[in-house]
Amino acid sequence: MKVSKLFVSLVTLFCSVSQALDLDIDSLESLQNATALVAYGLMDYYTGLQYGEAVGMFASPNYWWQAGGAWGSILDYWFYMQNDTYNDMLKQALLAQTGDNYDYMPLNQTTTEGNDDQAFWGFAVMAAAERNFTNPTDEEPQWLYLAQAVFNTMSARWDEDSCGGGLRWQIFTWNSGYDYKNSVSNAALFHLAARLARYTGNDTYTEWAEKVYDWMQDIDLLIDEEPNQYYVYDGASIDENCSDIVKYQWTYNQGLMLGGSAYLYNYTESEVWHERTKNFLNSSGVFFNNSVMYEAACQGGNYCNNDQRSFKAYFSRFLGLTAQLVPETRDNILTLLKASALGAAEACSGGTDGHTCGLNWFYGGWDGKYGLGEQMAALEVMQNVRCLDRPAPYTANTGGSSIGNPAAGTEQSPTNLAPLTITKGDQAGAGIITAVIGITIIGSVVWLII
Image 1: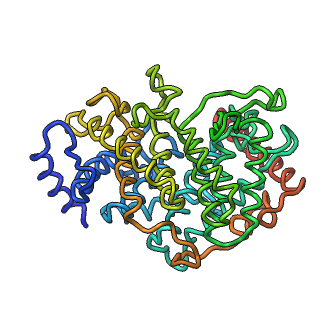
Image 2 (image 1 turned 135 degrees about the horizontal axis):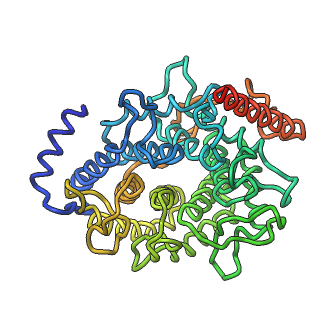
Image 3 (image 1 turned 135 degrees about the vertical axis):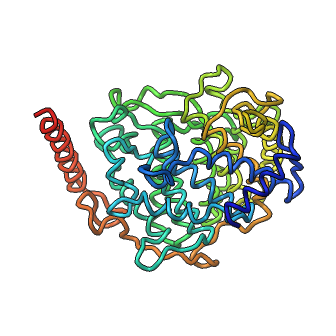
């Protein structure tokens, strides 16, 4: 479908919709019409086609990691709604931001990039492999290769010198948060390992997933004190050996652990991962108000920041994947997704276009909030209603055509050795590169001053 054709269809829809999305949750046509409007609103924040702007990036104040998340939502839009309007831009963006070593460490981001930032681009290309999105040319890096490169570079940063293991939030020493080990970075490594294990059949990824899970549990980032209830806390500072846990709970952390456990159960058929999947889902009730999703840690007090306003998008995505992979979760998840999608449709009734999406989905209308995060979240929760109408993620043995390399991201980078193997030399090499980059930046500043 061409953009011009989309414009014509949107004009027709504008004339037929007054001040809210008219959504029949059980009608594919209604879902396609509603999500077309929301996706159009999401892409209205895209600046990558403008003169002088970076391909793949969205308007300020949206960060690079949110761009990775947004392209993951657009990929889901193509897959669930069977609409290829944005596929050319999607493919261009995913390849434009890979960086010189094809590991999503591009030079325009590496001085500020965190482990969690890199991971969200990894999720997008992992989904591209699992959904059989159009493969790049033979001269370009493949989707699976890119996901493996993200995993390899992240796992090489595993830090046992503080708190007995885990990833730091930030990659470089000069960034605020370098002394913090947070759940999203570690849950992201766990989640990506689980997906790679299932896709490739390589049990080394399973071992890594178990390692991350056990570490998070050991330092109490994961709590299972109540029967059938598993909670994920935000993180801990290394200053006190990760003993003082910050107990905020966020939807995307819960979703990463839920979805990763579902992938591992589907792949291993282990009852351990089966129970964990069900327990993470059981405890997700903290993020629902009368079955409608909300960001409990900030939404009630009306102080969700720009990042946090996108979290429900990823939670919706991981709920859909869990339903595809673990049959007995389906009724519960579909009930939650459908109620939330209807609430989101009511919230998408603002702005001059009449379908700008808000943050609060049980407000009964638009709450005055708007942005890329709100559009992403509304889009994901609506399109994931179709999770059982489309195929589950493919593997290399069930139709996945993307080609990878277990050593991806390590061939040209001195900061990593063989995949899944970490040595003191790797850590020292990373420290040297950090120092060199720091000296380069200082030198550049001095040169400019002179």
